[in-house]
Length: 182
Image (cartoon, rainbow, N blue to C red; front, top):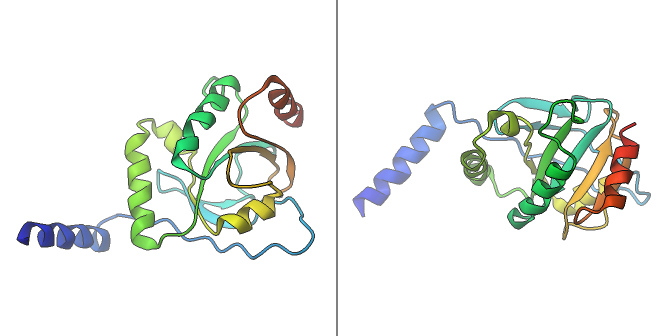
């Protein structure tokens, strides 16, 4: 029993005294009656502990947003990433946004640490920003139909959602995304 107590004490000490940075919780106001299909203003951290103000600091005038709500949706995001050739030079700018209802500060740190350990590439980690916010509010603000499937959106730095597609890759959906990037 003593080792369990020591583990908890050491973990808490690490969090309190080290450079462990807990990502912020994001407050998204409930959407108004009229859906505006906009990315809400928020301050978020990526898996490299870099803070950005979205959408103002999106990496391009038109950024591909890969949005997921469940860990098992990662495979679909990876498929889209391969089809859009996002890892290749000259690819459009993109961000991966896992959206999680806020579990509290300690669990935010735990979730991000787990994701960080599962993504060996620093280049990829720098593009993953976990959004800890009420899913329903986030989904409504972007004008998405639900959180049961993945979504790809093209967003401007002003937060406008130019287009979005949902679910598995298809040639038609890819065409829609590529057209919106022009």
